[in-house]
Image (cartoon, rainbow, N blue to C red):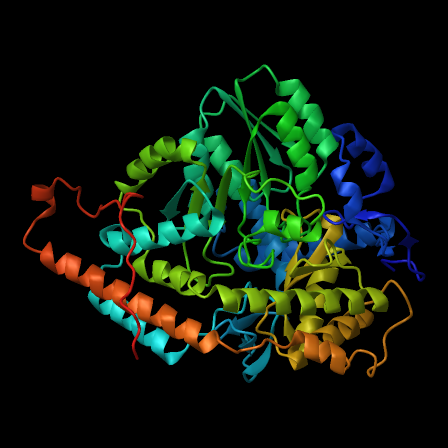
Length: 570
């Protein structure tokens, strides 16, 4: 057995950013003078999963060995030869358990909305199930017919490289600058490259970078590619360990950067911004935050972890300029492909120089993705209402799952629900059983998370209907019970898992006024496409060589005037 029969309960006062933080850790954090965070305590009871037994670990390793032998035998004629040990590990160990040794293979045959259509690799008929593996946090993936027409117009009339559509790029940059009250903004073709741009542009031999241990791999890669004078990682969300490293590196380099994420998607937790503010005041470092999962998912208007923190701590807010550099991706909540870098004005020259060098290689954000980001940001009221619903259904799920004995990592208002499974094969089995119960969810294990803390991640969406939420909770409880992953025998009855009228009423999104906002956004984008098309047509007779512009490159400076539409008289 993987878990003890009775739940392991530990009553602790939890920080709003650390639902799994122990009292010992709280004592350590006292060194950072975290007086402001005392008001962020949550007196709820926390479930703590039991550790995987030695016998279970041995059984797991034996299963892995068998899976490796089977995979090796199948690959013998093909002579699989990975370029790294990590590649071998992924091929022989990770992939077999990921698809539950062939039983959980499936193909998605529909758009990634609140429900998706899956087809089994074994030829079973297609089936529509809840999409628990998506990142449609704000529920903006669905689009009206009029917006689809605008996208087609964009594809037919404008160049695909965004660098060749300077008006569109400038409009997006200025919208993001206004959204985050930043000094400058630059676009990148992928979210991964947003960290590459930020780190390589700013860090040189005079900089020492300290990263959270669980920061995204793009941060580690970016730090390695930069010319930073030194690089170290501190324990995940451990401000005491960060303080220790700051003491060690102070004086080694004139400048220090601390890099964190706004929301750690595999742990569901958020950095302690009050402690970071205290440390930043003392050590005067630059704070860089990757808002890939917190952008348009945290905060009442979707501005990320800082807005969320101040929403949760209105009496003790942190300064709105606490974060000096933000990076994010358009592939999560926005539903596109690309990245953004926002920074204080003092970083503009370095970022512009590096962005220009990268752009000269032909890499730029695609114009349709710029249009998608503008479409989302031009509807602030819709975002606010959708995020209120997202938080309501997220808190409901956390509450019901905790009552049933399902261990969920992280913050109760986090829109990602990492469900603890323990052993890697348990995570795969849970994913497989969830699919049978009508929910698609992805298992995770080493190297993404510790091997014996494997988990299945659920991504919440404001687009989920009340019925979707009820079905999701029921499926999680029933699947955890079937795989012996409940930490209590107190499973909820079918009637108790159905929310009452009050909960249903709180979940609804008032559509009043949203149609007008949507029409204004459509009108703005249509006018922007027309203006950009006209500008390109007028420049047709001037070659790039005559204009002194490298082929495939047309940078839109931040001084480019914003395009405002004519009044919508329709």
